[in-house]
Amino acid sequence: MAAEYPGSVRAARRGDLQQLVDLRMRFLGETAHEEPRLRLLPDARQRTEQALPVWMGQDDRVLLVAETPAEGDEEHGELVGYAMGFLNVWPPVFQSQHVGEIAECYIAESSRGKGLGGALVKLLTEVLLGRGATVLRAAVPVTNPGARAQLDAAGYAPLQFVMERRLNAL
Amino acid sequence: MEGVPIRNARRGDIPSLLLLWQAMMKELSDMDARFAPHPRAREHMANELAKWLQDPNRHVVVAEEGGRLLIGFASAVKSPGNGWQIPSQVARITDCYVIGPRRRNGVGRRLAGRLLDVLYEDGIDTVRLSVAAKDPGAHAFWSSMGWDNLEEILEKDVEPS
Image 1 (cartoon, rainbow over the protein chains, first blue to last red):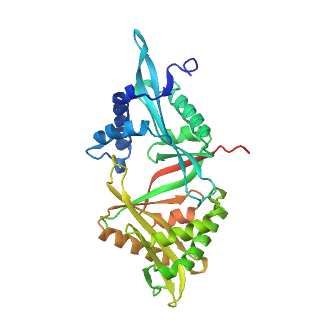
Image 2: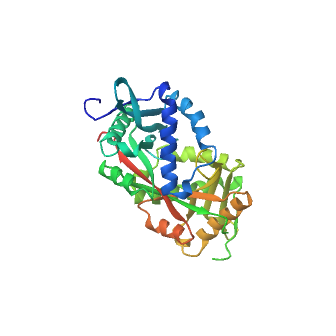
Image 3: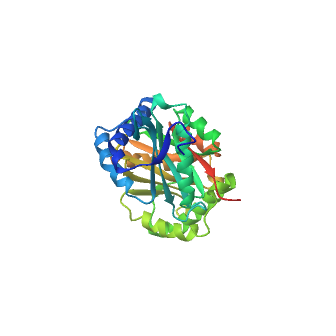
């Protein structure tokens, strides 16, 4: 992968945890800014710090990072993005049971437009297919047309709308 | 049709609920083949419906015509949120169905309304549901009751043809 993209994408490692927490909070923060109905709970950072090490140890979950070389340090790059997905094996309701879910994909603003997001999704897809996914799914907030357009271009088609209603107006 | 009673489902309703669920699935899969039921879906759902009626986090309501015929049902389940985004607790309407000949008489609205009333009494303030992208009628139904799009779920088939 390193030769194909300006940075590289690889599986996340324990040593990435702190940078991953920061990236994920930026991802969640940007999502909340675009869609206030998905704003953060006060302890979101603490919960992310607790969850990420657990996720890294789960066989059904895939956590990848995008890295650019740090100046003067060939071995230790700077993390500029990440992607997370998992293989969901649904009960026998619909024919498609082995669903690869692309849950999160984020590239820091300064590193966008260089193909790193596409590289993350490509590798994530390969890993999920290798684990037996027969369909891939991704949920995008309706306030993020950019992410929607990228999925369109990658061959994804609309399946469902998630709708919401607040009950305080009842 | 205003008089069709809405009540909580009972154990004896399971055979009728299963028939309604199968009819709902058939309509859905006729509309979009990606929702084709699994060969073991009926057997699985028969077991699930029995569990639903015992689950304290699940509500199932039915519309009963003439004191004996179920013409629709709706169900919702409460669960914690994802832990980092609001809400901290959310409910999902998982099913809402009225048989074709009894539609456009307000039964679906009353089923959904009953669920929302119960969820509100439970302290829930956010309710979500999923609507098939190829079902504009269902989307219009929920939109007319004040529901808004939050997310879109996209899918890519990767099974070798």
